[in-house]
Length: 162
Image (cartoon, rainbow, N blue to C red; front, side, top):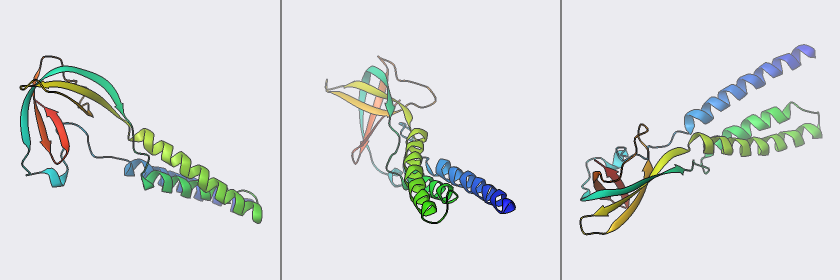
């Protein structure tokens, strides 16, 4: 019986390791910088307007909390961990509780892993219209007041670039 428990701990540890690797690898999100395009955005016409940066304020872009990877992997890990506790009905209850707790923890981990440093860029267009665009900071480089930039827009996606 002792050998069985030791083997189950090894299986549980291996499962936890694999599940967490899946959580972390599955949590990557498409970039939100001005230079990041989705596959479908490539080779599409964009509207270009020129502007002057008025300000760039650091902001946090919240991470994903709706992804199934973090929640699912956490639930699997929690369920497996819970199933090793107790016996009979107690094991079943621990499995369910472990899966629920693991799912919540996985969701929180995914939110933290996908959080991005952003900037709210306020610009004045040549027609004096003022716009504010939030996008991810690229390589720690913030836009600065007075810089001349281009505002690119296509299909509801707007980005600020030099």
